[in-house]
Amino acid sequence: MGQESRRPGGSLRAAGLSRSFDGVHAVRDVSLTLHAHEVVGLIGPNGAGKSTLVNLLT
Image (cartoon, rainbow, N blue to C red; front, top):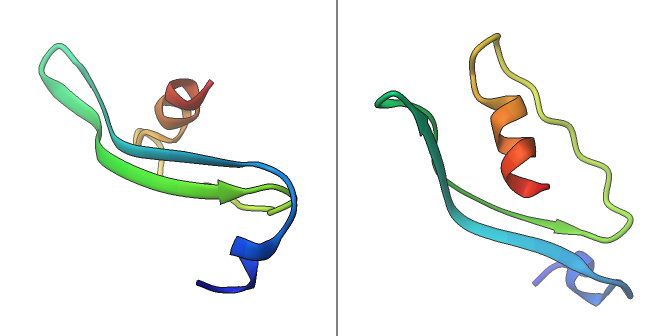
């Protein structure tokens, strides 16, 4: 693994996140790992599922 795996602190791991509304997939099978002190951005067009993904993580 890279240097990120040696950082002190926690991390957030999620696998297979999915969410649909009335049969329409807003988020499908998303997996991610976020490390402590890491800065990330979540970008995409309107309706891409960004807010839905963040809501699934909270």
